[in-house]
Image (cartoon, helix red, strand yellow):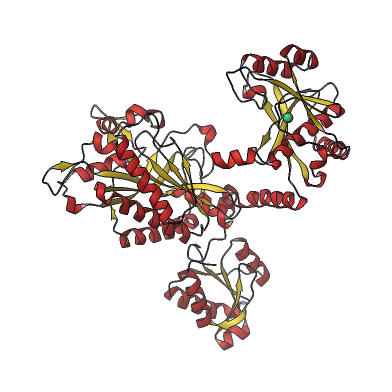
Length: 596
Ligand SMILES: [Zn+2]
Ligand SMILES: [Zn+2]
């Protein structure tokens, strides 16, 4: 959820409903455990939670019972009534509730508000009563529990949560729940959760034998297996072709660089905690690169540049290494070594609007080719602390914004949210489950050209400073692959599938014909296997489906006699026996159009 979506959500009826339902849940829990202590219970993005200190751990059966109690409370049509109190009155009211007392102290002196967020101003202390239940709360709530749909309500899980997120504090039990306006919306939400589990890239990575990582190699370091590497190769080949066709030059740069390089670039100043310890070579310190930029700047600097040479576009699939705490590593999404599809654009100030237009269009086309149709843009503008003069900033921001408008992109502005060295556009894609992933960044840089003293000779014969733009399109190959796996649920479109067709001979006597067909398809450029195992046809089909192979071609007596293949598609379509040529043109078309 973006900041502005969050604001809209927090003003919505759904938000009030969810927060009110957390009160109803607390009421139900305290009915069941009258000696229980309750802490905080906010609405969150997908529902709500409440933290409790209870005499025993909750079981799934408890959750069911609490849910039943909640439905009864909702049916009793309690109205929510707000009342403001002095701190003293509030302390009396919650005398046997230590967590509430702590919250009241916070409200009185500034500390934590009732959602557990820090604040330094004394707050108005308010309570909400619904039925016999009273909670310390600033609201807002629905008027009456009748606004909560008891059929669209579900308690999801219990998890341990330290009071105020501090591990020195007692561990409380956090019950997560959710509620929607209608049961259909709840079902849709539960379906998405289930589907997200099935699509988890770590699970599919194992099932489809795509990649692994292990402790001996080192956590957060990815091993690409042949199936995954094939998909990466195909994605990169497409990426490369598009870059060549669009005026990029490829460069290759080393994995390490001398400390003086990282001092000039500033990385040792402001990025050091993300870098690994130095390596000593002949008394000099070298660092493993966390970014490719300084090398590209040196390639620019290596020759005298004229205004006629610009724009220059350097692209590299550059593998970088960044320190991440082991606790935050996650499958392919967060790793320690990864390959960025990096590019740096250098241009004259007068070329800048066209260059931004170009890079935005280029990025959108490639994201769409990978199957992401829903794309949102975020524009981050000049922060307080910055380098470069405001005029340059505003010109760059205007170019970014105008470009988004020309491309008809929905976008949000994060005012003051830019990095200190320049404004940027981030592109986020929505996957098949409507989850948002940030992929591309188009980032201005007024800092590095200055630090590396980049120049070009202008028409006036004088040196001028070029503009520089960093661009990562897919982000990193590792994370992008993780997102692709989840977007497609492992069923990659035919153009990316490591195996496009499996040929399934029904009996041994069909084997030769199967291999003949495989030969013809391979000659036509398809990636094909023959399933030679002595398994029954249905088992072979099931396995091919499990491996999510786009096309299955079953071969029996009839197909052999008539030069046909019986086509079954991964999606359940079963066109049956067709001439081999027909299959070939169908497959070629779907591969060409990047569909299926
Ligand atoms: Zn409340
Ligand atoms: Zn860069």
